[in-house]
Length: 471
Image (cartoon, rainbow, N blue to C red; front, side, top):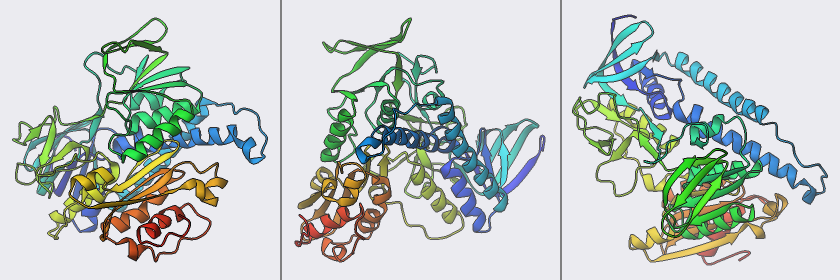
């Protein structure tokens, strides 16, 4: 509708995981909903993040399995990678998921508005569409869900040529022969794993003294050993002072006496910033902190009637760092929809939300690390069980890694940390246990089918309960 005005119960700016989850739940609760998106429903996660990256990681894992199939008595030649078909596979996954979301928009009778949205005031979002400007009025509330972007460095920006980030890495026309990755957290490690599987020489630079710094220290060490065994080189405790493209690649200069590195390509994995600039937030009086929208534990902004969720936000009076995870945004979107419907909403427990690094091997964790539990004042006990002791893990290729469970002495399980095969599929059980504050003696009664990878989790519970079976 050109130059029209529409009224809804809820208007949501941004159709990523948080935005569409909020829209669908609000519609289920009987509210009329307008969902505004300048790109495609699904946002960064579906089109430029989680889903396409994991599709590439799956193709990379298959490549490695074929490469090592002789270990299982299956004789093949060195796999030949058709990068164009790999990209087509990735796009096929994204397309299928996108069509599914479009169908859900129709099923929930959500009004989907394509265009550049902007917060005009506490109850109005204006959208510049192909037909003109559309004004959307929110009777109950506006929800900001505009997400985040891949950060650059002050002295070099991703351009899709010699310098890539997570966006360009998903669209690259080829795999480089060598790549330097700046950043040793989950994005950098996942792309390092992909590049290495497809034959690139990979060097990861991390300014801290360990990779995956948010993980339990034992997990970080094991992950580094495993990735080094695959041929990935790590330079820890280094700072990048400058970087630039050369005639045939890139050159990265390190601080101090750490020298200079060269490669065919540079990949920036230095975090994500909030998409808040130019969207009218500051002009509407919304409090920002370094570009992040400040919210309370009910996701209310400083302006009455305006909520914010997902990668965009920082939570007031929360001591930790707000996790930039798609499933966190979805949960927050659901809770905002329920709050707008007048329901009593329990605040999000960010400590007990699981997260995953989808490298080879995978990492998954929920709850407190050993050090975080000690810092919180707990008398801590831990138990580890190696996948090398599990028949199922050995069948899958050797059983590297372990499960580590952290508990309070004579108390509840506080955290579970996994590095090894299919960790992403194992963590949900641990999430239930930490969220329910179960004691090891209680969960030791749970029987895990044999032979499975889940037995490793059970073994840690048995050990902490004082009755180890194979420990």
